[in-house]
Image 1 (cartoon, rainbow, N blue to C red):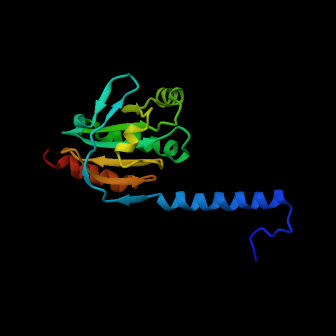
Image 2: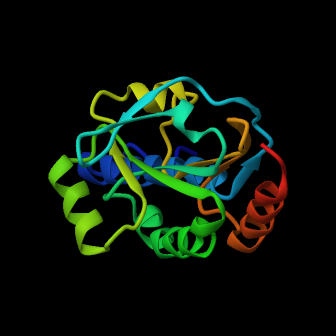
Image 3: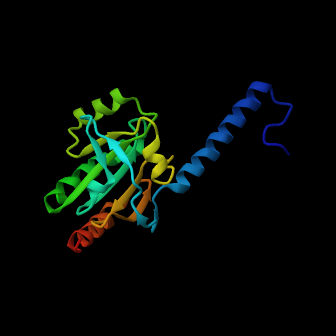
Length: 180
């Protein structure tokens, strides 16, 4: 028997189809949450434009352990995890750790600036206006997607969804202890 029988009015069939499509999309999105991968390799060469207008290149990451977080102000998970990202930055910043939050191309720049200022984000914030940075980093589409980069400029971990911050802190500590 079909999920939305033809005997139902068209508006009801369309509503049922919309609910089923939303549920399927939600399932696909949630399937990627907390997806940790050992996606490794050299950081892709890319230049990010920071909120102050200055360029920041991936070459500048060498010598530091860096968290690169692709996010959007419209992403509730991104907004919810931001206090933990701030806390992580504050905990490790004096030890050679850095964070770059890369706002997705569809995020209105005024929203990003407002978010960064009102939350007093203590780390670098870039706006990927063209989508080139997200494309270079593996064609990032889901937010949050976060990469942890070692001192040599190599991706050590990729997280889709909110990382386990206790495990992340342990890994950051190990990476900071390594020689560059």
